[in-house]
Image (tube, rainbow, N blue to C red; front, top):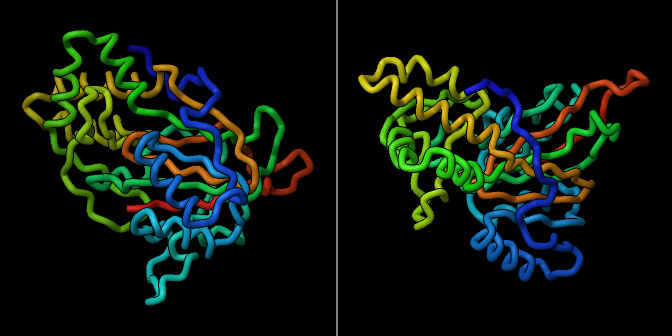
Amino acid sequence: MPHIDRCTVMRCELPTPSPLDFGSFAEGKLRAEVMLRLHEEHLVYVRGFPLSSAHLFGFLSHFGRPLQNYVSTVIPAEGAPEDYINRVCFENEKAEFGFQAEGPLAPHTARSWRMPPPALFSMLMVDKGDQRPDYSGASRLLRFRDSLSWLKETQGSAYPDVISQLSDIRVALPAKKVPEPPPLAPIVFSLGSPDLCDLGIRFRTDIKDVLEPQLLALPQASQCMGALSRLVYAVNNCGACYEFQMEPGDLLIVDNRRFAHGRANAERLLPDGSVNPREIWSMTID
């Protein structure tokens, strides 16, 4: 199989019903509709959400336990919103809350070292920044069910063996930003769905490089490496990557066990030499 670093973008519509308008709902009714869509579609898109850290934290807290952001090490007893929000941007003075690397960001799941991974990942667009066509940093989502359906179709009768290899092994995916010891856990895991392609995946962009030493130490090394290579190829090349441009006030909430998220190309500096003001607030919910 050829090595391809970036997911092939084939579609631009999100696999979800029309977005919800924040101003059209009482907050209690909006929460109920979000909960329903997460249960049925595993993805929700809300427009017109307030650009307030307190509002974002309070709203998302209704859907689970917010996790501390990547940089904070001490959380006040009251739980300040800023301790849970990653403010992802290029500006240095805002980097205490997060960071943003140049270039495209390949699809990955939030906190993939955990087992199970956090239930939800969310991001709120604050400033979309540079809007030149090749540098807009459009958001990307990849639905694992699409990738696994492609894999099932191409592998045929070998598909159950590929999934078995990835669900039976126990490997560690070390955390990059948070001092948490990674558990030994499968790469692919059941979500309780009867659909053989509706499975959870712990996925990161460098998963093959990270796991290769561990897999090569196993008695079934060649089978495990083959299964992992097939999975990575399916995720990166099945044509199920949804690309879309978020506007300020757009809030996306996705099932972090069923979707990977990423971003198209973005650069730190604008043509005039100023810093790209692009900024997104993300939160992870357990």
